[in-house]
Amino acid sequence: MSPVVKVVQPVGLLDRTKVGQFEREISNYLAEGAEIVLIDFQDVSFMDSSGLGAIVAAIKTVQAAGGKLFLCSINTQVKMLLELAGLDKIMKVFPNREEFEKYVLSKPD
Image 1 (cartoon, rainbow, N blue to C red):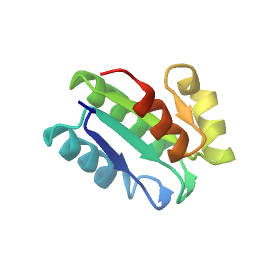
Image 2 (image 1 turned 30 degrees about the horizontal axis):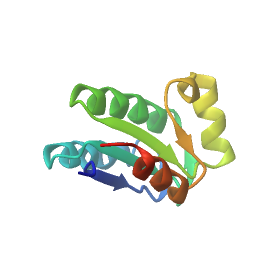
Image 3 (image 1 turned 90 degrees about the vertical axis):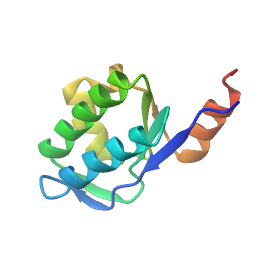
């Protein structure tokens, strides 16, 4: 049986004005039974320290629920922030959603 995967896809800026909605969306998915949460950054043009804090909070929230969190399609600016915070070392980041799907589908049940 395949795991329950939910995708969060923020748009535009991931800053202090958007992190509340971002965090609620992740919490709602977990309440609905998500086992894996993918944050797809394809449409994010910029992320500030508030967005970075929201990612850290998301990691903790998803792990506390027994799930896994992954990222994909990050741009250079987001990649730099993740590297500065050391998050690139503790979570898997995929180049795009297709690579994420290959990874998830290749995992045995």
